[in-house]
Amino acid sequence: MNSTNILIPNHVAIILDGNGRWAKERGLKRTEGHREGYKTLKKISKYILHKGTKYLSVFAFSTENFNRPKEEVDYLMNLFIKGFKNDTWYFNKENIRVVFSGRKEKLSKEVLEAMDIMEKDTLNNTGGILNICLNYGGRAEIVDAVNKIIKDKKESITEEEFKKYLYQDLPDIDLMIRTSGEIRISNFMLWQLSYTELYFPNCYFPDFLEEEYDKALTEYTKRERRFGGLKNE
Ligand code: FPP
Image 1 (cartoon, rainbow, N blue to C red):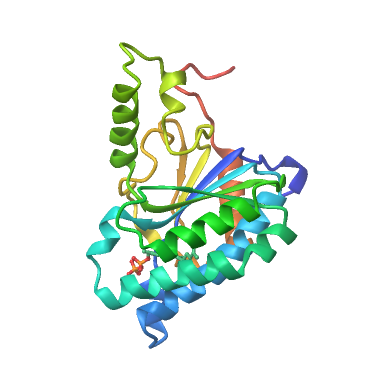
Image 2 (tube, rainbow, N blue to C red):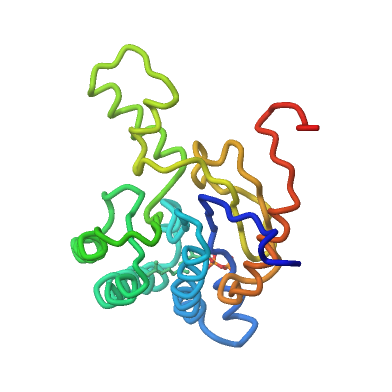
């Protein structure tokens, strides 16, 4: 298809699923899958944001992921620490601003410091926003917003005002991709997904590279978005 006919979504979201299975199929430890997943995340976030998408949200660690074996949780936390501390140069080179969504509690001082470094060092980048959801839950985000509203002693609130109480003030998601063939939302960005087009490729996240994303865009371009209205004849 002629690339000029391809629609570029403003906000893309990805559930990074299948790292464990990717590793298992290769006789590797699950943690190797997460390491490879991070490599893919760096490549694909650059590709997506450089194509003109302004916001990319990714589900890196759910509140429930703390229930995984300690070895795996520790590995992921160390990957976050190393990645956020050592790779600010990469996101700066690619002009990508990194922000985070999720609850701070339960995250160690080291992880929080590394997140802070990444956020501050990339603050002035203008080539797109990578929103990393870490210790994140969609219901938790809504409940946390409601608690902030109660603290602000508001009596009533509009949808537009409510949005400002979420972890980040982001536009609605246009395209949500979950890799690995699982067809579930799993408590990801429930508010922002209300009118999103969903896409579920069969490949595991470490294999979700440029070619796979182009397939997602081709499919997205074919979708007819109606937002609850009538077809535009
Ligand atoms: C789900 O796959 C994936 C995760 C719980 C972790 C995702 C994290 C990354 C890709 C690394 C991101 C790194 C940084 C620094 C942001 P799974 O393990 O549930 O796979 P499975 O369903 O095949 O077991």
